[in-house]
Length: 326
Image 1 (cartoon, rainbow, N blue to C red):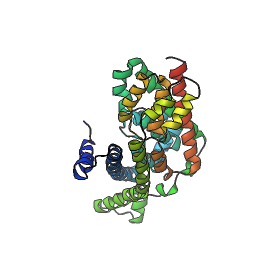
Image 2: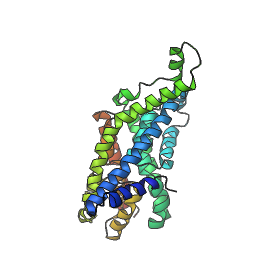
Image 3: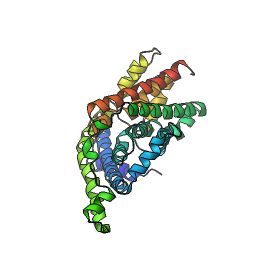
Image 4: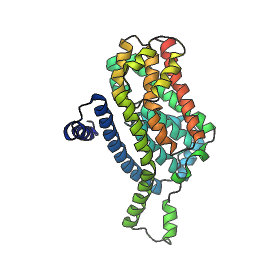
């Protein structure tokens, strides 16, 4: 069941029935904008409110002790990547969860593993890939995707870049602080609800202008850039087509399900599989709209590190499929 189907029906009604837009490109662009603004806006409110409650009760010190014990090195990154796999969000939609995890005290590198895995290994790669590309490719791609997310998270974690996260997302009251302010007395449910609502709304209001900017750019690209534009330049199998696919994929913005038919068409027209996958993963992981939104949560130094390690990981996937096994 598609939980966002009512939003899709509503955006279709607005564009094609109420506004009666018949121009193909403008219709697609405006439809995309309305759909994603509503979807991401609702996700921002719901997720940030849920994360405000989580922050309030979250045993930060205990979790940090568990994650820093390293009895099974890398297991925390694996769990974060696995959470990204089962979370059906695109790159823009997973950013509120990223902010919530960081503000709750989860190590930055572990959180980055989730942020990369969430759009990279998703419901499309799990359930649609097998019917189009077969089980072998699906298994290989998902294993590589999880490994790339874990490795990228580990690298960013090693760089010790926690200070480059926007500090306004880390200044929220914990349960202990609220009880202390209340002079040790029990905090009423009404007061807790008010605290959680204010915390969640503060983050949502802070991010939403960037959502509008990012989705607006994505809508224009989605509506006006023809699909055969990509196919024209990626139809040869040379080493430089993989980086080119990443560069060309980044300006686009689409969720993993909607980009699958494009990838199928590209491979059917002779574009190498690794090149097609590099384009797809750049589209769902490094889209310019999601980068614009993510910029609100971190400074350019951390954002650049995220872009570089993720782009390198995507290129590894592309080279692997083009030159090693397929």
